[in-house]
Image 1 (cartoon, one colour):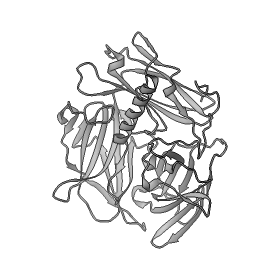
Image 2 (image 1 turned 90 degrees about the horizontal axis):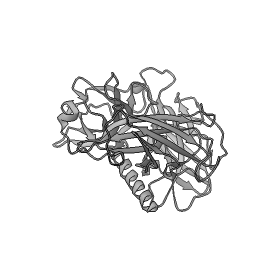
Image 3 (image 1 turned 180 degrees about the vertical axis):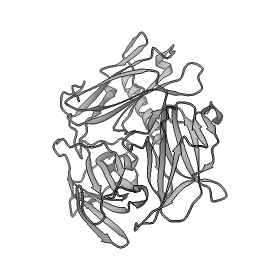
Image 4 (image 1 turned 90 degrees about the vertical axis):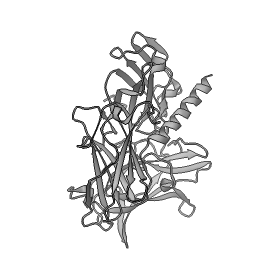
Length: 418
């Protein structure tokens, strides 16, 4: 029975991540960002109302105007569409409005137009908590064509979440894993059957490939459920993210070996990385990226695009593939971010066209036929690693028509407890 429970949880997680992650569907579009309250380091989660806002931005590789419209859709906890509510239930305004904020790039070798959309805006505001998927369409043909999807969540706080992370796990002690224990206090929310009405999600560094969906609570008290010593909540600890920064297209900056011009693009070659490196603390942003350059003005339209070359020195790893991973890959294991093995250099290599800025990344090995990545064979797993954990709690009362997001806890684990 335990194996069946774990399998169902993993299947649920796979279903959730397929629908949740941001996705670019048009190869002319690049650098999709969902930024909350002007802070690119925050996850795409914010409280409902209260003056909060988010901005969705992307670049289209031309200086020609394209008519883009957008549609906002409320989703269940598993990111499937909320079919029991109407558009007017969750939204003031109407779908199908055009994106009217756009600006051409300035003094860049790659010509692009930056489009941006703010939520809420004068045409639309959202009324319910929960998950949302925003789809952008090209509206220049006979029928609108989807070109990207962006996902975010709105919270109406109603439960208390207590949480700890320990390196003393149920499978090892101060070795290669971290274990999350947490509790949900729902005294302010009317819950009759918490096992049926509450849904929980736990993720590490905003990754949906290894998230845990609906772990089984082992303690139920008055207005409270607890998740302790749950093996589903044991995560490989990973290692600190690699990082680099391209501030100037002529001068190498952080962890860039050299900058070169090969008409018609700039190229940045990063210093090679090694597999299974020892743990060494290095402050990172757990996979985040920030668009910026040395001038740090009007970065949305003055940052150029650079072919960035990655190298992972390693023997060839049988039984799977190695992928670049970070928020800028939208945590998707797709051919664009798959590395190829070069037998001559004894290294995995990949190239990505990236906008100038600061980037975190790691290398994940994905076994054949699986959808979950692991750093054990690439960067290693070390208990000391600083990781971000996010816990989400959804509530649908008996007879409810949609999943409310009533709890959100974000915490950074550090071995010194700070």
